[in-house]
Length: 259
Image (cartoon, rainbow, N blue to C red; front, side, top):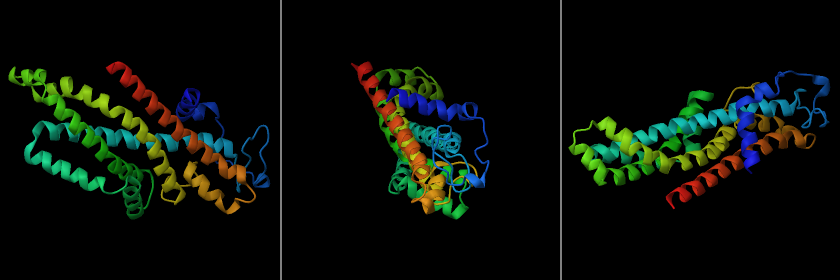
């Protein structure tokens, strides 16, 4: 699985360098052509190389999913730390708002926003990030509350250190340590959400290659082109599996450090 994780990350970063061809190039005479040695996934209904499109779709699907998690992670830990440090009414308002968002699945929020705003990367990014943010906010709030109650933090406050310095030096490291594995695991869920919205036509606009949209395009040809339909599904499966493995590896490393 470590090899799979490395391959997935390498493709996501350098797909355009590995295969510099045009994923949108059409050759209608090769429409639905079967797989071959040089075209392992064959051609789609418009005569486009499916393997090339899967490879070039990786930076879009994985990159957008990772960006959603980065935005949700950053906003979540900031809100959680501020709520824990300030306490009182601000803490109550922030956490109740987070609880309200937590009641809605992230894919549902993304679907509603993408539907109202017409789809595209922007609404997807905002919707999925908003749906993922509550878990990071709650976990960072709990971790920050425990750290702020420790003696060395109270000593820093009594010594007159600025709030920003206390949060950055004493609170932020343990918050990141506790939330980062969940952030890595959330990338897999974000990949599924991005692909689901792409399948529904609310994702990245065609003809740009995106895994969910590729599945949707090939559904009418499922009996003639099973391999072409399975290709983006396989890519999604191994990508989610790779990030789940990274989460598992990160969890073991954290336990070893604590020991």
